[in-house]
Length: 305
Length: 283
View 1: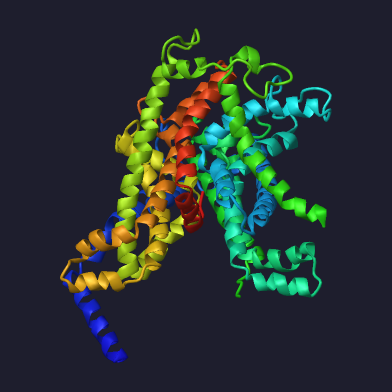
View 2: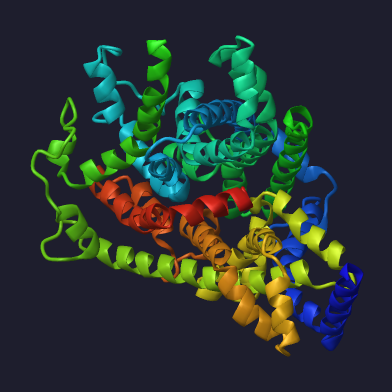
């Protein structure tokens, strides 16, 4: 009886499939055309033209080997941007991961209004980075910013401070806080989802064995949340390595906290040196892929319950 | 013991403070004039709430002197951001649904190759194709057009949208569709009459995150629009800030104006946004 039904089902499926062989191709065609035309081909462009001299107002375009990369390495703004971007990545990934874990653990057990708290938590994720940068520029304002006002009222600072100023590490940290504000909710949500899969019996068994909440966090929660933490960290790596909106609005064109993506923009659309822009894009893309891969290798562990 | 009982309420309070305080601060500032907003210490609630900033931005009644030209660009930016985000969302969701349905329910040659090739593009940072896309749009004369911006948005959002919808369709039992097929309905009728209604939560989730992505765009529209005709509100606000002359009360009001729509979507369609974020796990 079972085999009979299954055979009937299979036959039915084949007749449906046979009815219109071209249909699946027609259905995926628009997607494929978009991905090839505006994804794959531009990607190949970037990879190839990184090795060409491309300046729209001084043709012709010609092969110049690794000249673009050498010029970038000699460009002090790019060198500063590279170090800064590394700082953005380290500071941002660390902050987003710690915050993500902390928020996820806070939300782990159900409570009244948890859905509402999650709604409030993801709000910064949903807003444009540009607008968030405008809002935080004012929060950080050296003359009348609320951060200075609060810290001064609490007697934590004697004078109003310039947060986004000449101190590179301070400026980068405060700009990165704005990006973390935007991306930490996604990290928290991904880790939160991983935590929801942990069976409660594990915690009960640990408690029976005299394990306190702190140890349960290190021994159960953290190890079993690793798949979620890995995905969250990859998101953070991609975002921080490609930081643009926040750096562009809070730092402007100054050297201090400039990022590689900002330099790509300036080199390409202000200096109109497309070849070097391609080369820098390629470097950032490769760095993103390598670093994402490393994070997955180091952090990701398959978890089975 | 008592301390451990307090940890969670404190944690929840900190989450709310961290997430909402900056937004509150923007609203608080947007309702003040520069005179009160620049006070030390700051006013934590507006001492004399005013709508002058919003009036100036939208060009309603009396405006701040010297900013008479602002309403035109702001209104244009608002129209542009709505048109571009909405158009990109509709096109992305329709095309992604068609492809996801084919991948989830049909067998065809190169099925796996195409599927994984599309997913692989999601690993690349969006900005890796910025410059070539700009040059392609220049050569197609699509700079400063809705078409150019929307095409770029759709190409960027399609793989994620397809993946979210594919995951959703895979979670729906096929029995219903097979019953429909027995009744003689064609594949497209099955998709439209049976799959779409059942998959509606997944479609809404995809649409909400796609729309939010569109609303957040900055660098792509900055590069693809050199004048205000197609600049979305994000680009308009950035150029207003770049002029350094605009008072901060006005900038914060512009910010508040730009976050009303995404904030409402996130709060009202919360369940769908969360599902979309988890299924797509991007941005």
